Length: 285
Image 1 (spheres, rainbow, N blue to C red):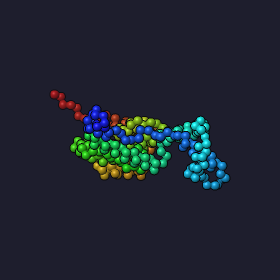
Image 2 (tube, rainbow, N blue to C red):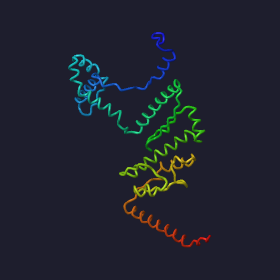
Image 3 (spheres, rainbow, N blue to C red):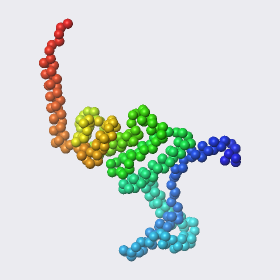
Image 4 (cartoon, rainbow, N blue to C red):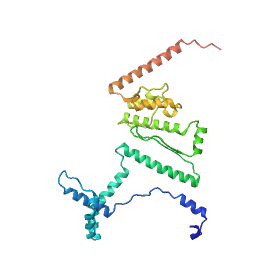
């Protein structure tokens, strides 16, 4: 490029080439030939007797190609217009729809994250930009392990500044994601906007009629505030086995909870009054 155009230096062209993304920019559109093949295979299989094995496209290719050659361009357009619209809609739905099976979601996540890792590695090589990428499960039913991508310098940054490793941070992040999914499901149909650990009874139980049962740790706090990996493992196992869980109170249970809470508040107020009455009078100055 430098020898041919001579507008910029060799280093300039090298950086231009290295910084061009190699990710696929779009998808191939459905073409007339593919649409015609699909339509003809479907037509041949529809004519088969019930219970007979369906034809594959490769088995009918010679007949389909001969028929295709007999048509002019206008006939091809007319024959394939409806099926092209169907294929285009199917491609769009396939790209945007949620995966129905965990194996598809697992494979898609793995392949995509591997591509992103390669892109970031190449970008770091030619620009020196530092990256941190964390990918964790958004659902307890997903199979992917926490995905961690980072440069050597960024790993040291977490060790020196936050006194924790990126791996521990990813583990905490996954715990938080699981917990928020669980509380949203338990609070349905109400929409829980945030998880509160301080004043849980006021911010969660009173609003959403939910209680947390069998918390396994001594301190009730956000998983992100837990510094012990052993405690995180205990908490993670408790959630996954449903030993610890959120439970929505019935109307009767919630009424009993409110009454008990009110009685506790009144008892606290009475104790405060008694303490004030029993305290010695102040010494005059």
